[in-house]
Length: 320
Image 1: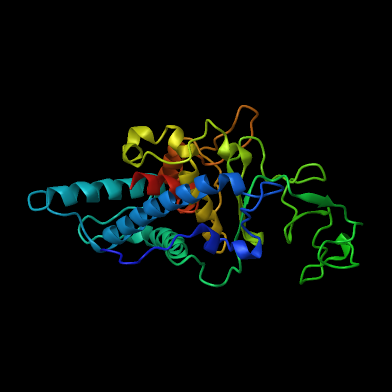
Image 2 (image 1 turned 180 degrees about the vertical axis):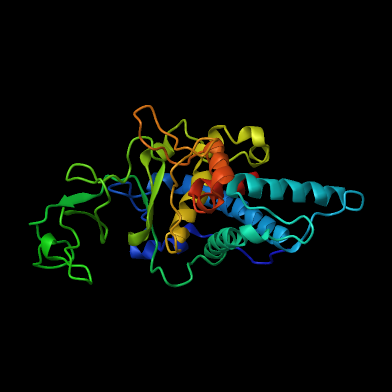
């Protein structure tokens, strides 16, 4: 199936530079001035692999396995796409009719929806209208902490501890971090650490505040900005530094961005070993599902979780 949309893919329109949610005028605080070119080039490249992923999904949805004798090239593509869908999402595609096998239908529909929304956002420079003005920040130095007894930003003379949720509970009993009209207090955050850009974190999506942050490490000189798409399509390159690129991480973060509005939300799932047992780091802590091998292990043991983990989306798009 051919998609005939004239893609706009204007970063400043999607993240609404006019509202100050993507600031290219300065590098002070959380501005993106010196990083604008890298962001825009990688966003455009991410759009291309999202296109390829969504086109592959529609092809698999409507086509069974082509004849080896009549359509050898199409059969080769079908096999590659179907096998990748199974490897990264645990979704089985029917070779006879196309589309997911009955036990994979719900997971397939979830994955299809996330890629459809990612493509829509890039093609039309907008979300579906329910998310306000998305924000894009570079680095995290602009955030300031407010204690519970401080006057809350944006609220005149009200203290932070007086801000309430709709159910009457205190919204920020531990204080809050503030930047550019965003007030947050992430799990594990303290007065000294906002937890937005921890060590070796390339990017983070805070869906409830509707923004994505690319951390300073993402712009490090050793970190690739773009994919080598032709090389990335070969499976032996999925373990290379292309996974650290801005393009790859755009797909990962946009999967979070749209998947955080689904039920259940699309997160970084806990990783498992090949036998399905929890994967632990050297300190005995549960690891997250990052990279090809953990994604493949998760898909093998829990397709439901694999279709709801962000790195599977980035890997699938890169492989298409």
